[in-house]
Each structure stands twice: as C-alpha cells, then as structure tokens.
Amino acid sequence: VVSPWWRAGTWGMAAAAIVLGFTTLNWQTQYKRLQQILESDKTIKDASTLFGEKYVEQVLLSPDTKRVMFHAVAPESRGEASVWVHPEWKEVKFFARSVSTPEGRNYRLAIIDDQDKVVDVLDTFTSDGRLFGRSIAAKVATAKHLAIVGNSDKPGEDKILYRADLKS
Image 1 (tube, one colour):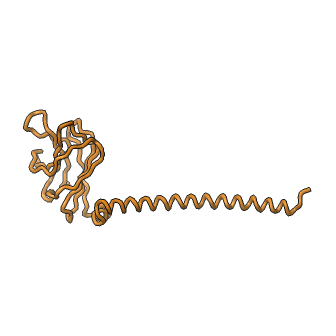
Image 2: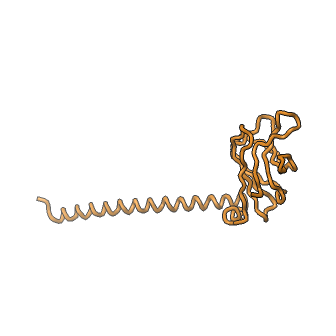
Image 3: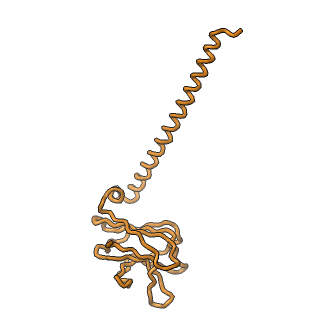
C-alpha cells in the first residue's frame, strides 16, 4: 500500500516538471528572438562603421535616396548591378554581382548619352563575379544614363553590357 503523501508528492513533482519544461521552452523562444534582434542590430552597426552612420540612415530612411538598377543589354550579360544616389553625397555607391570581366580585360562604368555613346568614364574595374561595391565620385547630377561598358569585337568600339536610366 502506497501512502497518500507519496502519491501527492509524485503528482506534485510531475506538475513541477511540466511547468519547468514549458518555462524552459518559453525562455528558449525569447532567447532566440533576442539573439535575432541583436544580430540585426549588429548588422546595422557594422554597416554604419563601414560606410558611416549618416550614409546608412540615408540609404534606409531618406526618401531622397535613389537606387537605380542596371538592366542587361547584351545577351551574354547575366549579372546584377545597381547604383545608389543621394543629393547630399559626394560619391555614388556602385554594387555589382556576377558581372565577371573576361581575363585581361576591364569594364568601365560610364555616363552615356541617348545614342549609347560614352560621354564620360567614371570608373574602370575588373571582377571575378563575386559581390563587390565601390564609391565613385558623383558626376551623375546631370547624367540621364549610366552603363557598364566592355570592349566590342570591333576595335575602337564600345559595347554596352548593362544600362541604367537615372531620370526615370
């Protein structure tokens, strides 16, 4: 015969184990959420350290910041590129991924006119296809179009690979 005190103690321990289990699961969920918040906060802090706090705020919150995507023009162009522009910046931010340059060749980021003729070369770069970014002196205030330009098969001619329309 089992004492009623033993039975009551057993039921009490079982109830305490269930409560402790639920409490542990709740703490784990809250800890994961806190960890996500801290990681996103760290990402913003890292970006602020790398690019500057004012720049990150303007990219994320300013209605004057404009992101312009480049669109592939040449059939072999499979990458992605964008430029970020803000009226207060002395530089524009250029980012690209999967824009691989042929070995021994460079691409140029250029201002082009309405007839796709290069007006001014802003930067020359090579890329292995990985994501990269760079700051480029802002000469785009009056520009209508930007392009990523490669060399054509015809000597002395430019080949527009990607095009971005700034005034749209």
